[in-house]
Image 1 (tube, rainbow, N blue to C red):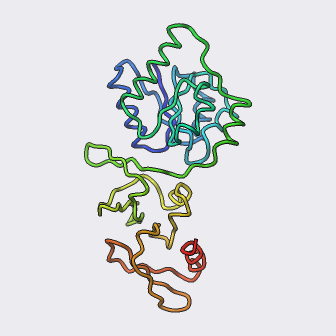
Image 2: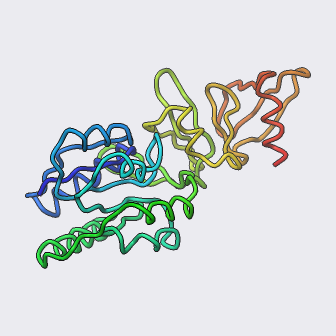
Length: 253
C-alpha cells in the first residue's frame, strides 16, 4: 500500500512513518510533504496514492485548500490538534482523524477502518464542496498546543503551557521549558509567531519570543529602552523603541 504524509511537523511525520512500517511492513511512504503548495505540485504530477495522512494546519495554510486546486481521489485520514467537538462535522466524511500526538493504537484503528472500506468495496467519503466551506467557517486558524521534540532516540511532547520562551542561537531555534530544559525545534522565530497564541506569547526582539510567565523583572533604562529579565536566563535582553509600544500593550492585555 502506497501512502503519502502531508504534515509540517517533521518529527510527527517521522513518527507516523515509523509506526506505519511497524504496523504493516507492506506499507510504503512514497512521499512526505510539508506545505499546501508542495502538496498541490505532488498531486498534479503523480498517480493517486492508496491513502493520505493529512495535517489540517500546514505552515502555508489549511490543507483543505489543496482540495480546491487539485482532485484528490485517495481516501484521507486527517491529523489534527483540534479537540473532538471541533471536527465532528467532518469525521464521517473522511476515513478517520488522528489527534496529536498520534498514538500507535489510534493509527492501527484508522488503518483498520480504511481496510474495512477497501475489503467491503464501500464508497469512500468524498471531501469537497459545502463540507469544506462549513469546516472553514467552523474552524478558525488554530494556535499550536504542543510541540513534538526529539530527545535522543525518543520523542517527547511538550504542551505550550509548559513553555516559558523560545530563543534563537546561531542558526538554531530552541524551546525553553518550565522544567529548565532547552530543546531544539524545527521552526524559525517568524513561523513560531504565527503558530502561537499572541495572547500568551510575544516576540520581544529578534532573538526571544516569551510568555507572560517567563518574565521576572522589567528595568527601565530610558524612555525608549527596556531591559527584560527571564526565568533561568542570564542573558541581557533588551526591547528597543520600535517594539516597546507593542510589548506594553501585550503586557496590559
